[in-house]
Amino acid sequence: MRSSVRSIAAFAAAALLCLAPGVADADDTVAPDGCQAVSFPVPQGNLAGTLCLPQQPTDVVMVLMSGSNYNATYWDFAYQPETYSFRRAMNRAGFATLTMDRLGNGDSSHPPAMTLTATATADALHEIVQSLRRGFAGAQAFGKVVTVGHSLTSGTSVIEATAHNDVDGVLLTGYSHTLNMTEVLDVIATYYQAIHDPVFAGRGLDSGYLTTRPGTRAKDFFGPDADPKVVELDEKTKEVFSLSEYPDGLTSTLPGMSSLIKAPVMIANGSVDRLSCGPAYSICRDATTLLAAETPFFAPAAKLRTFVLPGSGHSVNLAPNTAAYQRAVVDWMNTTIK
Image 1 (tube, rainbow, N blue to C red):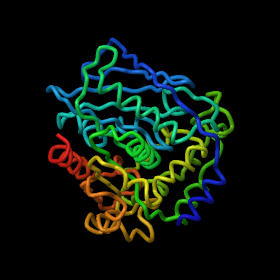
Image 2: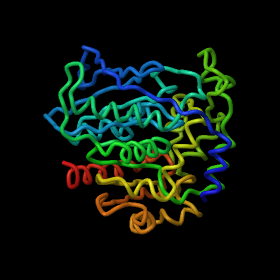
Image 3: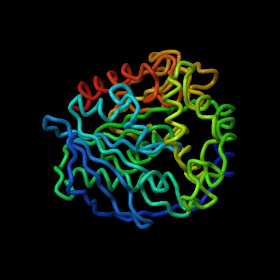
């Protein structure tokens, strides 16, 4: 597996971008649901996000960052949000959330594609964590911060946690140390330049930004029982990314790095995740099997917990039975983090 990952890294390698600390700004307008827009300045522009508070006071915030094929809508899905909005589920459970778009993604700035890296995103995530602890632009200071990643940003969360040791928990989804490299390459084969995609026509993106070809996301990221309307909206709200984000992002799936995490860790995968459940979905048969496969890669301090959502593909937030995954996360937060 190491050689396969390194081959992808060599193919997609790009120079690292160094992000300097920034000061977050918040929109003074707070919506009826307790949410407000925030912006974190970085050298290449701004990271856009939304801070949402639960009805009851809390000292715990979850930072939700979108993966390579998604923006913040993945965490706060508009279709049947009572089912598919992870953000709303966490707010209902009493936790604050900060939903963020990566650089080159969603409402954040879009610098030249090949300047983007997972390490730079991890550095920005560190600054976000510190801002939340201090309180920013009138927002409260939080005593506990949990990072939540999906796919590529699970790797980002691992990089941030090992480099800075400043979070109280790490939730990794669409992640494992046993990638199915045949399927990974098959999914990568569905990527093409976003300038040729009707969703991104006229947005002024450079040719380095990629997206999934129309009609491929159901196979790439969903299980067989996905709601067709979810898949349809997912296509309309899909996102761009750069292959330069993959080399260092994939290093988080190699042995060694994750063993340095000192905070509690939870891994949640779908049982038919094409990317993270290799070979042949074998490590995702159930939570016990996934725990046995992943435990050697983490230190005892991680208090590793695992969860497998039956029938779900890579995007566990958008599976019809995602409520079971939401409940498992809330239980982990209440018993391990709170």
